[in-house]
Length: 266
Image 1 (tube, rainbow, N blue to C red):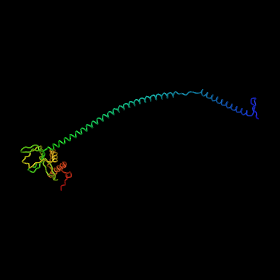
Image 2 (image 1 turned 135 degrees about the vertical axis):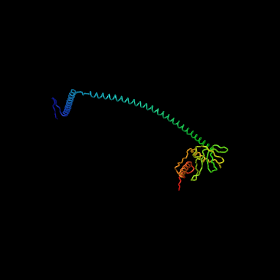
Image 3 (image 1 turned 90 degrees about the vertical axis):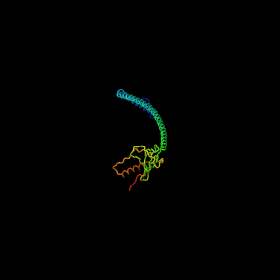
Image 4 (image 1 turned 180 degrees about the horizontal axis):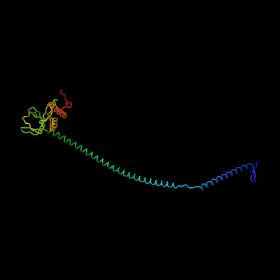
């Protein structure tokens, strides 16, 4: 069996393996301690030679950032105050707008009610006026006179006595070339409104139909417009112009159809 002598002591067999293991462990521990001591010495040198950096610039930057932050907080506070003020004003305006809308709606409703009432009242007044006019029209004594000279006169009877009949706005009735009838002033160049007819010159006189009475009243109201005829035109030209005016007037009054107003002369 192998033997090893170390420090005056002899070791045999398995003890040698244990001793070798212990020695290697001890050597490793010594080596680790040496490395630790070396790192410690190096660190100590670095600490001793360490120079603290100049942080004054960072401090200035931090102070500036704090100032900017304070200014930003102040601005945000002002903005929030303005927002609250705007919100408050908007709320007041909204309430005022609602009040105005309600007031306007009330006014519109009142106006609509008044308009409806006025419309109904105007309609009643208009109907009353129309009824009154119709009653007045019925009471108008418009008569057709046949004179001994052959003239046919339609006029409003204003008064009468033993010898005469006083008439107002008389018109003479004549036949047209188209087979209809036309009105013309009895005295076209006179400003008088009333005339008298001798009873002895009347063959017969009768009341006219309501349609004729209405047409006569419309025409009689226009008697103030006199017909003037330039002397430079021939009688045929004057007659044609006069006839055209009468035909158009009769078409407007409904006596003849509009398609009959256009005539062809061969």
